[in-house]
Image (cartoon, rainbow, N blue to C red; front, side, top):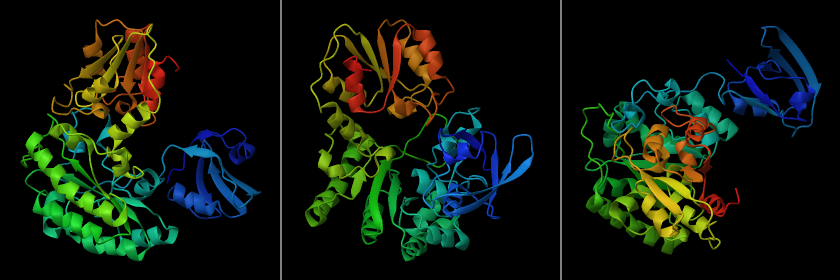
Length: 424
């Protein structure tokens, strides 16, 4: 168990108790917390006794009184103290298995942890949940969760996940619903495998599970040049992506007419592949799965258009993008001092064209020799919470190479507009 503190908030209860980074919380009132969920519930008591282990190994008991709603004010090196629950499946489409060899070990961690699903929106398959896990989900009402469905046909799902446990999806969703848990769902769509009639069946079965089922996202399978799995995977092309859009739009129109919500959403990549217009903003409802690439492009466009752009004519800017999103950026910005620079993904393979998988080295090689005042890069290309690209090139290194140009990660359309106006 490892409740290792990494930061103490100024003015917090933790600071008042003289806790410091490097301390570990071992027990709360004689109980060992498994994760920050446990810790939050345990610290809801007003009379607290903490067993702390300091960095030098010395242990100390700290007893104190607090208000029921008073938070500790400490950050931890991990949200789970007993180790991240790893995925035991061998999915035919697993992207983690397609990353380059010899990359950081953390990039190869395939989590399948219901706690990270609740806390951070990570998708889980449910295949490793035990009766004890279900009881804990019910006890703490860990809702909503994010569930990878892929197929509601039990046999097909078991084949895709390469585990017989994958066939239990119906009973596992039943169990979640009995616990009062709501959940978002996703399908990684593989051409010739879980599309067509199988996709119709999956959509129909998930729709029956409303209101517990909150949304269904459908994203196309991605294949990198590092994939070694012999299972044949075929990526979608313009015609097949258009066929998926047509198929799903029929459900979207009906659902909006019946309930006023779209519920079933397609990943942005389908529209890029099919070279079709993105749905209007209302079709994405409240963007329930934007972090899953659902509606990011439409949201970016709407945020950018919120104000008229008056780009600073004195600033020569290079705007870095994946090859697919570059087309959108060119439609938004037509200024001679702003250059849209699509970066071909040589690291993962040229067919991987999304901005979030660009690497530092590919960006450097593409820009080398250009002179500009400002370089805007997609923040999604950086590891969450870090200034590091997937190939371990740091943002600091990019800034050093292109100095004195200003290098800024851009998170959304509004920030993009402000950067071009010289406001950030």
